[in-house]
Structures are given as C-alpha cells and as structure tokens.
Length: 245
Image (cartoon, rainbow, N blue to C red):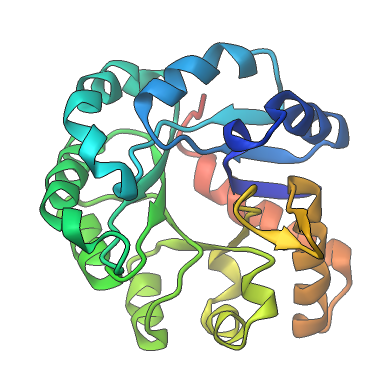
C-alpha cells in the first residue's frame, strides 16, 4: 500500500488519468490545491473516489490572490479534512510578499484552530517562522512537506509532534538524505509533489512513491513491505482521531 500525502494532481496535463491510476492501484492520494477557487473547481470531480481526497489550499507564492480568495477558503473549510498547500515562503522567489503571506497564514491558522484538520505545510526559507506560528495557534496535525531547512530545527519540529513528508527529489540529494536520516521513523510520511519533480525526464506520479519505499528499505535495512506498513501506521495514526472526510 502506497500513500501520497502531497500531490498536485490538478496541475497535471490529464488530472483524471492520475487520480484514476491512484484509485486503480490503491494508492491513497491527497491532492493539494493552490487556491480555494481551484478547490471549488475540483471537489466534485473527486467525490466518487475511495482513495483520493482534495485539500483546500492557499499557496504562499500566490499571496497576491489571497485577499480575494480568503472568503472562499472560509466557505469551503468544512468540505474537507485536508488543508494544503499552505504556509510561508521567504526564499528569493517569495520574500517580496512576506507581509501578505504572514497575514493570510495567520488567518488560515486561526480558522482551523481546534478543528479536525490536517495541514500540509510549505516552509521554504521560513521554517522557524512556520513552526512558531503552528505552535502559537496550537495546531496539532501538520505535515512539513519537502522540508529543506536546518537539520537542528528538525528536532524542535519533532518535539512538537509534527510529521514530515519526503519525496524522490530528497532521496536524490545529499541534504535531502541527511534530513531523512534525522526524521524519526514514526513521524515520516511519503509524497510525490507531482508534477513538480521529474524522474529521468518524466513527470513524477504517485506510483513513484515506490522508489522512496525502496530507498527507506535500504536505509533502515528492512523489507519493503515493512516500510509500507510503517508509513501506513504513521498516516492512520494521524487521521484516526479526526473523523476525516
């Protein structure tokens, strides 16, 4: 059983092909959206699937759209247990919209506070700020997607009980491997982050989670089915008490 906790299937050339494949192969796939208007367009298309869910997102790199999109975020909040992609991006690409990002992320966190939601978090260049805000708003269920920050901060994130989702790009880089080694096994999840990653010139898909399973199998010196079971246990521990939809 494969689990993809972060996939932008709405951004593939043929989204239906991707979600049909996930459903057919039994891959639990959580689809991210970058704006609530995208969630609005997609939610009715995934309602008939057992293994596929759609998350409600406000991507930090689309902060210029947040003010007009926020009412939609609040409107659709009760339609899903999954919130993502949300967070902050203070890299060179995102730093100019820092204040807008901070305002909307705080508003998002306030709106989900004490609600049974799971957040998939973008934190590039703003890992400390994201962590402080999650703790400040007492967010209990969050996944740091494609974490790329300081190794030492991982320990603080872990002490707060938050998870990490890792992808094929991370198992192919020196820093990514060090990050994976630092993450406790019980807080590890898998993601594709498709279609933003390529493998041998082809766009990554949820089925490629198998490559991460293979890597972890060698890293932990256990059978692949043991790694799949580990990820499954971690994921269901996260969702079991939330009555997810």
